[in-house]
Length: 430
Image (cartoon, rainbow, N blue to C red; front, side, top):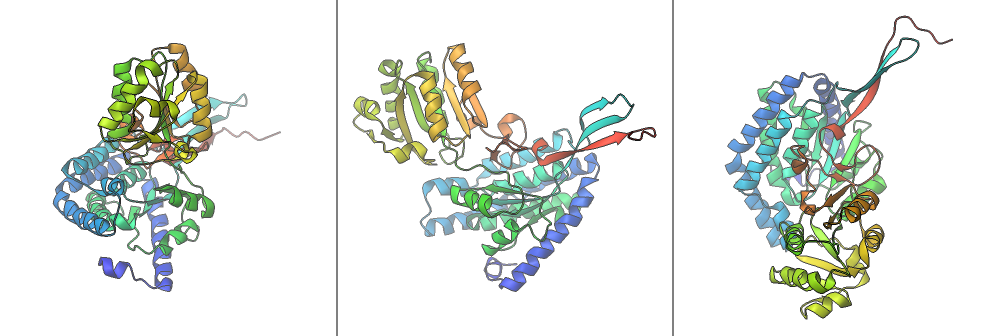
């Protein structure tokens, strides 16, 4: 189906098509839930090879997406999230291969105990069912989500962003080839074949009860809409307003290395640092080198009075800057009065995503790790490690910042729930 046709499906036809997608996903989910671990592993291995073999086609599709995005005036940050190259495609394939090698979570007993009456109770992992993933910009989510959901025994319905429409279709074709290779139903990984935003609303409504969980992966507006309108449970994070706090006991060389990586390695990822906090006790020795390093690297700095005093290139930060996820080469810088003040700032302005402390003071590090209420907290490491692959998960669907079921990178285990299996020998309740 051509891109032109898929943008002009009439509403009744779209509703029928989305309903059919949901029903087919439910049927596939029942098959995948009872599929052997070896079959899923075989499919995932074939998917990884298909992605590598399809690299030329994926890159060609992505080039069209990037050209279209540029013609619409897309920002450099969005283009970076959208753009694929040989390295990124290789990383996609490698991620699928890692997922293939993970332990299959389905059927694993999380806990087990025997009651005084002799009943044996087990808490066992089971698939969630049908997962809907709504995402923007990053076409690699097509591969990550497809692989993770399959490994966890789920079916998935993928609704990629309009800007990566062609890229996602090319990646999806490679995933379907992997399913065929293992004789698993291709409906286990479906891609919504339209850019029509009405399809998102239909997914939020649950596709006639056929969606069990929704995962939004995109900007603040998308995630807020999903959380506000969804009639099914949601794994979500809002913005990744991530902080690096440089403590009085921080080694300057280490602090410079971590801050530069956390901000500038890739500015458009949700784990990129958006605010630098510097302990007032370290400011005389650390503030100017850190600010100058960022500016010299091409990063705009918006700072408080102390930060502006060390370099005339720093512009004044306003209140909104402390709340902002820039996803660009921009950072806010503030001097704080020690670790307690840093924690207070993060609690007030942060998004409970990922925050780091740089220090050689073990007590300060433990206080930060214990009291910062974020999904991921780090000591002496870059915030850009907020990634399922870096956790050994192979890939992730997203970073969940809520408190229910999943938190942090949503990988294979987080895409399961559990049930209780009880084995008795004729017990009845008195």
